[in-house]
Image 1 (tube, rainbow, N blue to C red):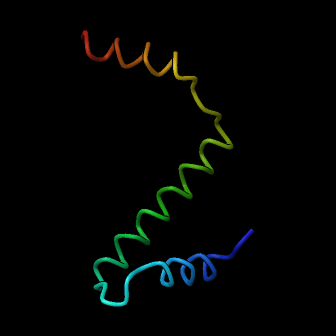
Image 2: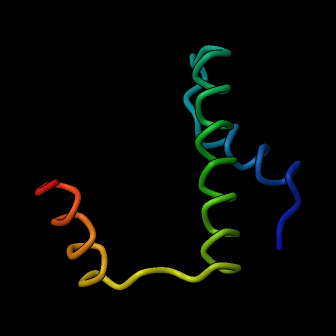
Length: 62
């Protein structure tokens, strides 16, 4: 598994040379949110597509 520093280095290599600091901050934010989401999914599990559709349809009809 790669370290946070390695992930940032990889991200910086993928961004264009003329990107702004705001662009870098946004991509770091997204990377962090995805990492947290994957950790949550690993610990708490995930829902099937059918369960998601069932829950969504309940929210839309209320």
